Structure formats: C-alpha cells, structure tokens
Amino acid sequence: MASVLPVIEDVNLRRTAKISDKIAQREKEGKPFFSFEYFPPKTESGVVNLYERVERMAAAEPLFCDMTWGAGGSTSDLTLDLVGNIQKYLGLDVMMHLTCTNMSQGMVKFGLEGAKERGCRNILALRGDPPAGKEWTKCEDGFEHGTDLVRYIRQEFGDYFSIGVAGYPEGHPAGSLSGTMTYEEEMKHLKEKVDAGADFIITQMFYDVDNFLKFVKDCRDIGILIPVLPGILPIQNYGGFRRMTEFCKTMIPPAVDERMEALKDDDAGVKQYGIELGIQMCKKILDSGLCPGIHFYTLNLEKSVMAIVEGLGLLSYAESVRSYPWRPATLEKRHGETVRPIFWANRSKSYVERTSAWSEFPSDRWGTQQSPAFGDISEHHLAGSKGVYAEMKRMNLEMWGEPKSISEVQDVFEAFLSGQVKRLPWSESESMSAETASITSTLKWLNRNGILTINSQPRVNGAPSSDVTVGWGAKNGYVYQKAYIEFFAPKKIVDALFESALNFPLLSVYAVTAENGSELRTNVLKPKTNAVTWGVFPDSELVQPTVVDPATFMIWKEEAFSIWTTNWASLYEPGSPAIEVLKGIQSNYYLVNIVDNDYVAGDIFRIFKSILKS
Image (cartoon, rainbow, N blue to C red; front, side, top):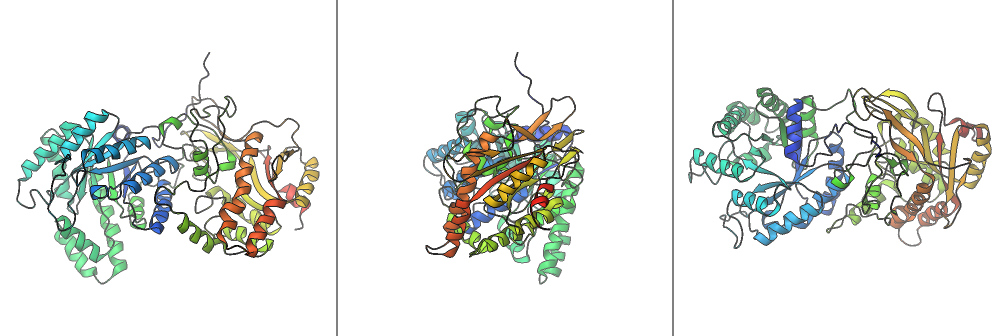
C-alpha cells in the first residue's frame, strides 16, 4: 500500500508554476497580490547587488517577478542567467520578457528554449522598442507584432508557457499617441493578442487611475476577459519622473504635476510623495475590484516599492507566511520536497546546487529512500556566464578584513552577531534569522570563548504555525523545534564537551575533523536521523521538514571545512598571516553539532556553562 504523504498547504503557490494559474488562485481566494519587475544590470557589482535585493524582496512573498530582455537580445545571456538563478536558488517564479526587436525567429526560439531549460514557465511577449533614435523595423525572419510572437510561442510550445502581453491605457507611443491609428484600433490589436493565446495583460506605467480603470472596462466591453495588471512606477526623483513621462508620453494629472513642481528641489520630499501617491493609486485600483493585484516597475530599487506594499497592508507582520522553515525551490521536480538536513540552513543555494542532479527528493522522511550522491562543492552558484566572483571577493574582503590571530577571527564572528558584519562565509544571506535574536547574547559569549558558531535554532514547544518568528506551514497548526547549535572548536573544548555530556543524557553530540577518513565522534549509541523541526496541522500527518542526519553531516563537513580556505583564505595574497591563521583553524578544529532533545524545558547552553568560565 502506498504511503500517504503529509499535506502542506501551498500558501505561497510555489507548486503553481504558471502565473495565470497563480492569479486565478488568488482571485478565487479574494487575496490581492503584488509582483516586481527587474532588469539586467550593466556591471558586475550591479548583478551582485541585484541578487541580494531580489532575495530580500522575495521574503515579502510577491506572486512572481519578471526580468527584462534587451533589444535584439543584447542581454540574452545575462537575462537567462538571472531568470534561471532566481528560479532555482531564490524560490521565486520568474517571467522572462521576450521582444521582437532585432530578433530573428531562431533567436526567439533560443530564448524560449533557454527559459524552458531553466524551469521558467512564464513569458511576457512584447514587440519591443526600437534602438534609441531609430525607427522600428522588422528583423528578417523575425516578427513584426506582439501578436505574431504570441502565436509562435503557442505554435511551438503549446500551453507550456503562461503568456503575458502589454497593454497601453493611454495609447501606444507609436500608435494612437503618434496618430498612426485610433485608440479603438489599438484595442482591436490587443484583442487579437488575447485571441492568439495571451493569458494576462500588464500595462504601461501611468499616473491617471481613472483613465486606467476606463481602459480595463473598455477591455471587458470588447470581450477581453483575462486579468489586467496595472504597471506602477513609483516616483523616485523629479528628473527621472520628467524624463520617463516624456519618453512614454504619459498623462500627468494636474494635481500630480503641481505637487511635483512644488517639490522639485526637495529630493526627500519627492520620494516621500512618490510613496504616498503610489499607495493612493494602488488602493483605488484594488478597491475598484477590477484588478486582482499590482505589478511594480522597481528599476532595481527597493525602498519605495516596499514602502508602498507595506502601506497597502500587503505585508504580513502579524503572522508567518512561510511554507517551510526553509524556502522551497520553485522548480517543478522539487515540488514534492518536504525535508532537508539542517546543516545547509544558511546555505540553501549550495544545497539546491549540490542536489540538483537528483531525480527524486525526500518527500516524507529523510532516509526512506536511497538518496543519490551530493554533487561537487561549488562557490559560483550565481556566477552565470558573466561571472560575479571578483565583486563578491571585494565585498567579502571589506566585511571580514584580514585577521592575524584567532582572537581576530572570533571578533568577526561576534561582529556578525552584533549586526556589524552582514554575513559570515557560512551564510549566503545578509542577516540572521529572526529566531536567533532570542539567543544572540549567549552566542556572542560562546564566540568570545573560542566556540565559533555557524548555525543554531532555539527550542520551540507548540508555537502557533502563524507565529511571525518561528511559524511555518498551514493555518491552525502548531510547530516544534529542538534546540540546535553547530560550531567549530579546538580539541580541548571538544574533549571537555564529551566529558560533560555524560551529565546531559538528552543532548546528542556529533564532532568530526577536516581530515579525510576521520571518524565521527558521538555520544549517541545508535546514530540515526533525528527530527529537529516538526509540525502538526489539521487533516495532515506529522510533518518534519528539518533533520540532523549523521551520514549527511559527514558530507556537509567537507563543505563546511573547505569554506575556511575557498571562501575566506583565498581573499588574501600569498604570504598573508590571515591564510596561516585560517588554515590552522581548518586543520586543528572540530566541526560539532549538538541537539537538545528536551524541546519542552531544555537548555542547550548548560553544557557550555559547565566547561567555560563565566
């Protein structure tokens, strides 16, 4: 008899790959959503910063994001890299732009096949703008209209892709706004794009909400019934606002025009007004009931967009929106994945990369199937064809300095816990998890005493699944955690821990050195997989998404120890004292993990207090 898998409500629709299906689900729930547009940066540092920004903004759970495509495929390689990496590593479904501008049919197919290979199921099909100062001309063996591109995608790929198209509430700059056709003729062309197979419409930027709502009603009147998403561009500065509205021939309501003129010499005032106007516009749109969500043109900026989303009440501060303690990947072959080892909690991209060749993923309990081998260790998860390693190296050197002693290494770890360093070499994200705040002071004390912590979680005994700090999973459930801590420490401390562990029978301790073939030291008589996070939900079996597995710890230890040299010591020139210090720690320290199995009343730090001075 086949086993019944635990059912976790897909609260963030990560198992729903197509944007059209996501929108339909949110409409059914009556839950408004938001989404973000980004563009490929021109510099290496811009690429690094964009990945970090997308990861931060993804935590707000946008329904999707989209990535632009340069005219003639000028950014094709980077666009495909960004689409694939965000989709694979950051757990966010991406819609890729594709334009007709200077694009042969072969190049269009290259882009579509590249998107498919990377797990992208969503395309925004556009005619595109001509290069600056030139007339738009059809490329030989290319497409002349967005409608032609939509037809081609449906012809070649069937319903594999969800297809979005552009709408122009105020008219197209090269159409009705230039006098080459009427507004009614433009609407007819939009209807043709929809009839060719488009699933939803995203509009050009605008500031006249009443005119936009009229556009949506005009769509409905001629039989366009698919969702229409408003494209909102927050005002960032006076000059940019004037340039963009002039380029797009955007209507500016008199009240907006007057306010911008009054504020034009007040940069902070303009930005604040942009936020206030954005909130006002979006509220009116959502209150109309004509649009299920809002699409933001971010210009790769974060603060104003997030302030508007917050002002709309679309950010959840009162309850958790996490599906699992770790962020699930959106790739379809991982949709059944429900359990991971805790060791990669701060290096989820590495875990996804090292398990990317697996044909199946643990979907009930870790170890119920024979897992394939982990892939090779790689530190270029987001490098892509353009490469970002040099810029990352510069940023890391600035963060971690050049420690000349073990005490200076300890200072770096403590600075991370104090928020003075954005991340450690063992962390891929810029900040600690919220739950770490409750144990930060004790972690600092451990690091000052030579115990270099890289991963931890406090115990949790039946917190509501909606808890904003530790909650996850379906509504009306309860979640549990065993306290966990992982660290590097010298042999003297490790020996003392094992001796003291005799007095703490509910602690499971594992330790190993970097040496090849080194044996696993443990106080556990029969080492086996230990669930350290689990949840109980209505109408579901017990769900245990995070485990400590001794065999996998031996795989993780190779990566954890290698980071001392590949991520840290490699920053310095040969002969630097920092290299010797870091290699010394790598060679002489143990990697240790401890689980406190008393999740009701345990104190995982008592064992450290027994061996360290106050």
